[in-house]
Length: 141
Image (tube, rainbow, N blue to C red; front, side, top):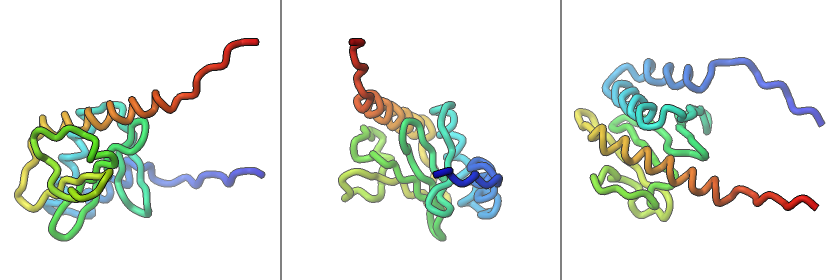
């Protein structure tokens, strides 16, 4: 069975650009800043548009999502519970067994270097998981 052709449309990066522009307030500025920090921390990050409108950043799996709400911008790290967080950036979804989030309200700033360290830790965790899931090569017979 043939797969349907992908429809040509805006890329995930273009959709994220649009979201930031549409917000047009502190939430757009905050999401834009956090996006820049993610890209600085991991220049190889892949931007995706998932779940009917959620900016997502991946590298060997999802690193985090960026959602905007009326009173906050939420960055949810898919494997946040497994990440070291010495700067105590995580302040939401603390009772989950896997995810952790950073809620950023109007006027709040996230420490840039601590955030980039957190992103790099998420990349390393995903990379370690990707390597452990690699299938061993068979010996030639």
